[in-house]
Amino acid sequence: MAKRIFAGLLLIGISLVVLGFRLIGYENTWHYLWNISTIMPPFADLRMIPESAEALKLGYDPAIQNPFDPTHRLFNYPKIWYLILRSPIDMSWTTPLAIVCTALFFLGLVLFPARLDKYSILFLLLLTFSPAVMAGIERANVDLVFFFIVSAAIFLLDVSAIASLTTLLIGALFKIFPIFAVTYFLELDKKTALKYIISGALFTVIYFALTLPDMLRVFSTTPKGDDFSYGVTVLAQRIVNQYRPGYAFLRFRLLHIPVNIDYIQLRLISYFGVVLLIVISAYFGIRNRSCFQFGNIQNLRAFRAGAGIFIGTFLLGNNYDYRLTFLLFTIPLLSEWSSRCKSFVSRLSIALTLMACWYLIITRLLDTWLPFGDQYSFILDTASKWGLFFTMIYLFFASLPNWLTLDQSTHTKTPS
Image (tube, rainbow, N blue to C red; front, side, top):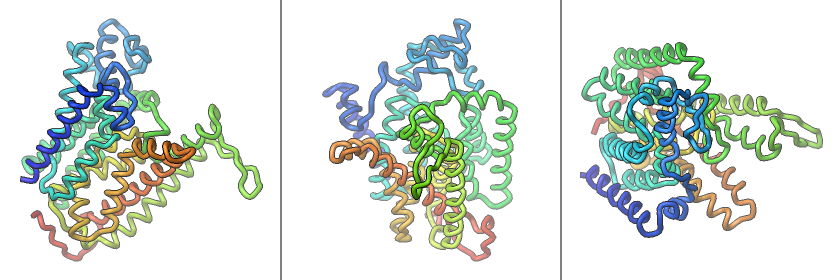
């Protein structure tokens, strides 16, 4: 019943967005409701795929030269995507493909939760129609399809573990990051869980090694922002870009002593901080496990998938905020823990997720109310995402099965 209510509310929300397009215009709807700057023609991220397909048909390699893209973006996906580029798709496919991507996302959103209460429905709606998620829809980013793939993999685990892993690995062939969701297999018994997790990890490592030059090309040509972004290197990039534009170092005075720090050193400091954060949060998470051993099994799987993708992509470096969409997987269980365990960390995770996903609106408000409001909003945004990284590590380790933490105490999970 709760799923039907959630699906109905999603349909109402979608209808209101479409109504906004009709009443105030396509670009105005994105700007006034979410502070999203549209790129015309619509569906800019998805559009690169048919543009690259047309370039390939004329003998260009879109990874090297892409004359059909207005801004000459290079095709920054792995070579396996060329199977799609060699299909009959062309520019006329853009809008139909964007509609399919969006429909798959909403289908995946309804597919994965097993049990929803009124609070989880509210939080899911607030996140679904947040600027971070809606930016992915406005761009028709292919991560929408990968959200569906991860959701389908979670759903299939009750049907066939092999089918579930195969679905996840198909996603990892086209974009590596879905493999970070493989931890949802932890809910199986020890032997089976290790078999599937190790198999998935080995497959990905071998695939990555065999295509290493291509993967390095993808990484080097993928845009890396210092705003509307999350990841371990975002702050270092922002500091350098903000205070010494065009230079790879930062000079400032500490206790009246001149200090020079280059971009590489800033990144090393960031990685040192993130390792320290992992150790601290994992330690306290494992020490406070009792309550987090309970919860709906499917929601627990979804939580591990969403948390795994957020943690993994955070460690990779820079990700645009529309990838925060995968945090939707964590919400049903976070809401359950918040009410059942009265968990402060779970409630904090929800609050930080909302703050991170509504960053563009927070920026608009602070820009209106305060001088240099965009600077304050960036600081707040960075703090929320690093705080979210801490809470996700904490809760991920707190919810690990007993066999993995060497905890011999017995906790019975209630599939409810």
